[in-house]
Length: 345
Image (tube, rainbow, N blue to C red; front, side):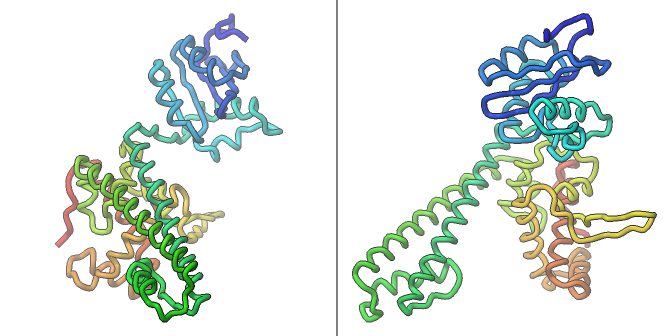
């Protein structure tokens, strides 16, 4: 179909993204289909550039933020929709054409929620976190392998990376522990690999420190007890524009830190936290809350009194999640008002 016809011009265009092929579904203001076609990757941008400015909707997936930035540069209004909000609009069987039509339909709903577009700077910070997280996981796996192999030779090392760092040189120097020459060589290689990962993680964290030092939003977030370097930079990478959230509770709900509901018949039923959103970021927030709970008895302000009372009633795990929830709300307020956190007397 042509981009222009007697039915008018395209006002809403839904695109089902992929790596090499892209399915398009465009409609005019009356909901009549004007475009139904599949394009290759090389032909997509030239086609979009020739379209008059319109609303373009895409599904949140790999490469979505890249295409959002590209389409915006061409003068279009671009919206990213979470896949779970598109699924109810898929008619009958699932295929690329049905998906593109569903994305187009979902984008026209007046109360639809959209995903904020990430900037290049946000993606850089997120990449740092993902690479660091993988390096930490590799180091943990390597430590477990070293402990497991040594146990088969009768050498026991307690849990924890710090114990491995301290005891491996001693094990290698001990000539009476029964280790063979071959295994000592293998163990030495594993130990050198662990030291390399330690240095790699330290380098990545130094990059995050430099980013935090030069970013005003990060400096504001670091004033909140329970939010450190990793949490602050991860929040910066995930949130971007905090005005996308109406209030602090919306941010906490977006992180999955609010109760899940199964209410009906006017009877509210609240379950555990919903665990929606970014698992990595939510984990950092809860770990930060756990740190605050652990030292709450050393402070006398109103916030720590509340934490101590909650700890006595519900335990440390629920208290840590409650503190993470409160920190998410405080983070929204701090970023909105652009003022550092001030503890109540």
